[in-house]
Structures are given as structure tokens and as C-alpha cells.
Length: 396
Image (cartoon, rainbow, N blue to C red; front, side, top):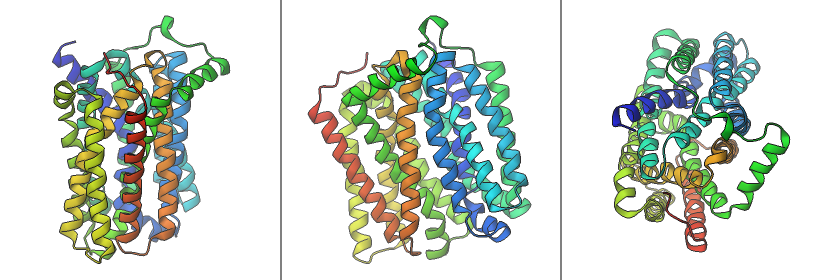
């Protein structure tokens, strides 16, 4: 497949994949205004979105293995748009939480099925390149969404954020209908119904390397989720940054992740896909551990915190896309289910940790940083268990 086709698919799949995360990142600067408008509890809307976004990926992934990629993705995008309208019109925190839960269900479809499409079309190093390109397009969310959200909130109010997200969902429907063909032929689909789903899950649970790589991805990305859930309060209230200043600080760390991810194709070709994960995990954990030690010692200067986080997320940008490719390598016939299991574990873990970390928030960076360091240590532990304890073949 030529480079033009690869880049075109990356743009389409990247934009569809980014809708769910964009729906998270764009409204982060609006959280304080939402609480002022609707009352306390706006953070629950973030937890509700994460929970449904994680759990329903499991369902959409399996449905895509049974009925093809396009139909389940279209259903999810339609729900995403409808729920976005509900969020924009919400008159209470309870209504907002409900519609965010529904929006998370819709966003799950594009997020997970796009990864299965990548597995349908590409393999090995080419798949790593495609996943990294997809991540580059996907990076528009954490790079631009918080900044865009801060401008929208400033000039049009928090409800306009949800109207913008709704328009993005409509664009996704147009792209799906006009530019993306079915990638899973009928003869390759699994048996429809509960038995087919049960067989697919049983294969994955018995595959210990897959379980290990799923946990590596889960605790690696949870580090970012802890930052996602706590950073707006820490940066804006403890360090005194404006909404725009917070957006720039947030974007810098996201840029480190996605810029590093673009090196993955070269690194995989030069050293082998599985050989780059453990060194990157060690670098990630080392940076987070140093940051935690300094914060515990009382050093909380903003440049130091942002610098070490920048380095940490750069290493994480090597780990996450590569581990995703490795985990799906031997499960092409159930790629949707495998991708959904991996993402569901990641996002449900992230939602739970966000809720727990909120209990310890005290307005200082310490709870956030310690939680991130703890997740990094677990990432390293599962990396050692997976790659030292099991023989893992290089994808073709």
C-alpha cells in the first residue's frame, strides 16, 4: 500500500479516533465554569464519560468482529452526536452526567473500531508506522482541544464547547459514509452471538503475553489519566496559571508523547518492535520516580515539574503505540475484540484511578505526582514480567 493511501487512511481514522478524547480534552478548561453554572459535581461527568467510553469499547469491538467495521461505527457516531446535543442543553449536573455517559458510549465506537481497521489493513513495521501516524493525527486532541476549549469558554460559554464537539461528530459521520470502505469481509467475521463472543474472550484470557501487554498499556496510560483529571486544578489553582496557560502546559506534555511516537517506525525497524518497549518503560519510570522524589522533598517549581513530565510522556509515547501493535499481532481474526479488551482495561483502570486520586487531592502537586509515579512503577513491573517471563515473537 503506497504512502498516499496510508496517510489518507491515517487522517480519516485519526479524526474518527480523536472524537472521544477531543470530547474529554476540550471541556477540561470549562469544568470550573460548569460547576458555577450547574452546581458541584461536574467532575462526575468526566468519570461517567471515562467509564462508558471504556466499557462499551468491549461491546463495539466484538460487534465489529461479528458484523463488520462500518455499521457499528456509524451507530456509535450517531449516538455521540445526539448525546452532544443533550450535553449542550443540560440544565443540571445530573443531566450532564447522563448525557456524558451516553456520549462516552458513542465515542467508544470510533476509538476502538479504527484500531481494528488498522489491524485489518497493515502488519508488522508498517502497522507500527500507521499506528504512529494515526497517533500524530490523534494528537490534535490534547494539543489543541484544551486551548480551543479555553477560547470557546471565554467568548461563548461552556455550552458552546459541546456544540463544537457535536459538529465534530457530524464530520465523522460524513467521513465514514464517503471515505471509508468495509475492511472485514464476511468470511473473516466470527460467529454472531454470545458463543462467538465467549470463544474470542477465552482465547485472549489464555494468552499471557496479551494479558501482560494489556496491563502495561493500562498502567502506562493511567499515568496520563491521573494528569488529565487533576492537572487543571493543580495548574490553575496551585500554580496560578490562566485557562490559556494551563492549556499550553497541557499541550506541551501531549506534544512530547506524540512527537516521540513518530520515531517508533524507525526504532522498530532498527532494533525490533519488542526490543524498544522495556528500555522506554525504564526511562518513563525513572523520570516519574525522580519527579516524585523531588516533590516529596519539597521541590515543586513549575519548570522542573513540567520538564520531567515532558520527558516521561516522551518515553510513554514510545511504549503505548508499540505495545498496542504487539498485543494485536497474533489476533488478526478477532482484532476488534482484542483491541476492545485492551482499551477497556486501560480506560476503566483510568476512570477508577481518577476517582480515587480525587479523594486525595489537596490542591498541591503531591497527590497527582505520587499517583503518576505509582502507575509508572506498575508499568515497569508488568513490562519485566511480560518480556522477561515469556517468549514473544516479532510480528511479521
